[in-house]
Length: 282
Image (cartoon, rainbow, N blue to C red; front, side):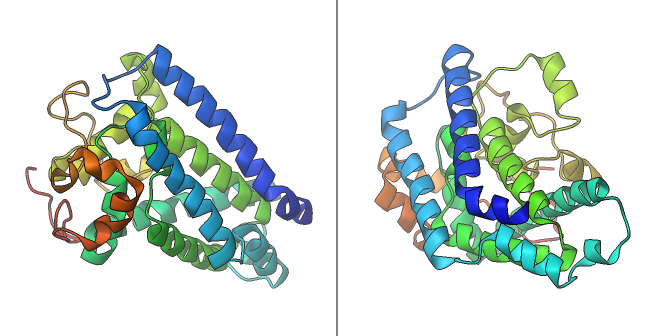
């Protein structure tokens, strides 16, 4: 099973990505949450270009695929889950949840450490919020994230199936919770008990630091509530809240070359805060 997944992993991920992207892009057209400040033709080429660039770089610069590494870890009995006598289905669920918790703390780390925030703020610098924002990450951040993921696999020992399932869920929920889609408030209130919704995650993309440093979850919403980083709504409301980073609001920053250079320009403290302190405005 694991060998089959490794051989077909790129096509499985590409198929899932394409399906979710098409569904969310169509949803944005027919039921948008906010009026976009800039047309897609100005933002989408660079945002999708980043997705393509990151996919190529991961294949060439991080040749040890997470699924293949999970097979090695399982064969050698490394990791916490490989030391426990539990049903495979339970181990599968625990593996996915453990990786999601790692991503939550990684996300906080990329906000808290100035050098990492320089990389991550390219994601936040998008001045609109839609399905393509979910894949807008600097290539260096993607490579660092890949390394952290391999370390997490070594520590927890999730199966190759759990790793692939997590990857597919992460890509799907990232596109879902970054989408500019309208969900009835009553339905959103129920959904955000189980998954991070667009309204929940949009708060995290506020231009205001005390809102941007909240709602770090990507898949599961529980970590923000458990660790005190949850904020229900933006102060200005979803229709009127300001998205992005103040120092990168010029439309020229929507170009791919400008986006890639953003980590090396401006103040590293913009939008960041030190671990253990209370964000301004609370």
